[in-house]
Length: 276
Image 1 (cartoon, rainbow, N blue to C red):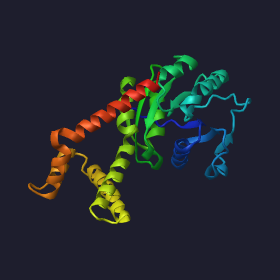
Image 2: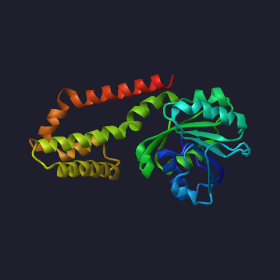
Image 3: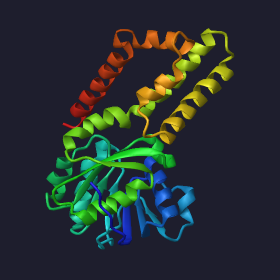
Image 4: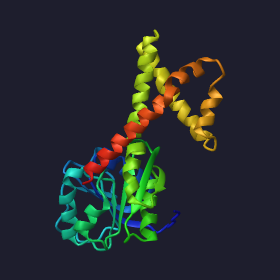
């Protein structure tokens, strides 16, 4: 799905300015994606935004705030989402696009409170989005028009690669793969470093080698994006060599694949349960 729109955003209301919310706000300011930013969070406005004239921070939505924002970005913890949506319903933001990065909360929860006529985009960024290297999946409801998708896309793409989904049912699989995926990669780094220590490497040296091996390999896969991962693996594997010996262990009876299959199924199933 390709949607393009260069129309400016006048006012963006960000509800929730925690780690992900503040990281996104920082990138939106750098890219000058909106004229005015209104931040609502019980905590004080982070210091890096306090002197920016384009950012106004509030601990609660002011009762005098009646103007419909172009976009309402919801970046709150899932357990307080319903209360937040009730507040927006009371404000009567009838022309706003709602962009959610609230983990695990399906569109129907938004529609139940805001109404099915409200344009809503649900997104799932992963933690590398905080440095602009994430992957973000998004899905829109029936009320979201092309212009709404374009606006949401503009806000999300500045944090990494954006993938539009045609069906929200796929969001649990996305969460299991790319949403939780960084933790799997970090575990791989941990495990490689521990294995290196067991072979006699000093802990700091082993961790440096493990970390940079993963970073470099990911960069190579990105540079050679047209080359299948299986081919990149084979390029490193000499017949009868050390890599082949290690892969024989990892790939025996598809052991690693079966482990990952089970892990992603567990994450997907947990995501489904949490969305109920």
